[in-house]
Structures are given as C-alpha cells and as structure tokens.
Image (tube, rainbow, N blue to C red; front, side, top):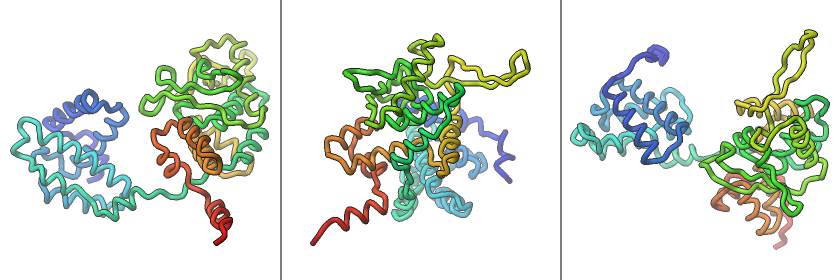
Length: 337
C-alpha cells in the first residue's frame, strides 16, 4: 500500500503520546516548531511501517526489519540517519512514560543503528562550489537597475556579497538592521527583527568590496526612505506586478517582506545565469568569504568566524573553508623540501 493510502489513518493512542512529546520538545528541549514537525514526520514514517500498531509493540526485531526496509527503498543515508535519530529520541522519551515503562525495552532502542562506516558516509559532504569575489562583482555590475525590482535585486545580491547573511536573514532584514558606525557599515543580525538561526545575535560587518557595491545598498535604502519606509520596514520588500487603470503592467512596492526563500533564490539564479554562470545558492557566498579568509591573517579569519555566526573556528574551516583543488595544489607546490 502506498503512503498516499495512509494519509487519513492514525492510531488515537499513538497520537496522544505524540502530542505529549510535541509539548515536551517545545517546553523542555526548547526546540523550534520546524524541528518538532520534522521529528514528527519521521515518527509517522515509522508508524506507517508498523501498520499503526501501538508504540508499545516495538522491539529489536522490528528495529532490524525497519532498517532493512529503509535501505531496500534506496533512501539516502542522510534521510535514514535523521529518521533513526528522531525515532530513537522519541522512544527513549516514551520508555519513561507511564504505561510504557514495562513494555519498551530500553536496550532494544539501541538497535536503531547503522554501521560506523554508514554513519561516516552520511556525514560526508560533496565538495561545495562557490564563486570567486571577482565573479560576484562582475555579475552585480552587469545587473540592470532601471525598475524598482531590478534595483531591489541588485541591492540584495550586493548586501549578500558584503556580509554573507543566511537566506532567511537576507529575506527578513530590516532598514534599521543596516547600521553605520565610525564609517564602517554592518548588519545587526537580531532575532527580534530578523529570522535568525538558533535566535543568535551577531554583527555582520561589510567586507571591503568596491564602493559601487556598497553604493547599491545605500542608494536603495535611501530610495525606500524617500517613499516613506520606516526603520521597521523590510530592506527588501515584496514587489508585485499589476495592471493600472490604463491596462498597463506596472510594479507596486509594498511594506511587507518577501514570504518565500524560493523568491530569494530565484533572484540569484536569474542574475548569475544571465551572466553565463551556473547557479549556486546564496548560502555559497558564506563559503566564498570563509575560503578567502583562509588566505589572510588569523585575526581576519577569527573576525570572519564572528561575521558568519560560528561559535567554533572548526565550523568555519571544516564546513565552509574547504580550499578549492586548485588552491590546494598551489599551496602545496609553494613549499620546497
């Protein structure tokens, strides 16, 4: 039976326990709603496999069959490890609840595991491509800026080049978030005003790119202010196409933020593909900065770590700072024995 046929099926007792787990995740584990919903989705996949039997029926034999079934479906290792982690966390919580303490064997929960090599393979990342700064600058300068939408899009990519925000931050950045002190500009990334990862606060300082790149942002901000935009309004507002009284298509700017990350990605896709370059997502700009920082002083690298919002320099180096193969060859061949 396909998953679609399970759409309306459920076990009322299981649903009650999942609801309690949802409250536990929110109040005790302090997880956000997105994380909770992802975990519940994994748990439902486990329920579907079990035919919506009560969770108390779980044992080591079911664990073995479940893992085999996932591998037989050719699911990715990332999906399998994420699913098993979510189901294990849930069962570990459930095993401590009244009515389940004597029915779920704690040791059997540990059977929801894959091999060490499979775990390493799941964690392994493909090489992450990123643009060079000269490519980014050329693309920005080639972008048109006649209409309001073109000006907004050019300012958006300029800001990303200068301070490498996460895509949700770029989408929700406010006019008040753009700050200048002692001649230096930065974006104050604050969860009160922007959608940030783990509700972290940081200062994302502009890197010293050519003045015209920074000018794209400042002129766009000044234009919004001239239209009556206030500090709490979005720096990159929604712009709609509509027909006016003369039945002509025109763009209308609204004081509301762009709702979808996909819209942001489409802006970047158009700009780089129009310049004859392959699309790489906006997050790759963070890799561009980290890889550049590796060639600079330790102080600059540490400052970039803070810019990116990383608690550890290891994150900056391991997840963002992988050298390109060309740079790796160049650095190694510079050494003489």
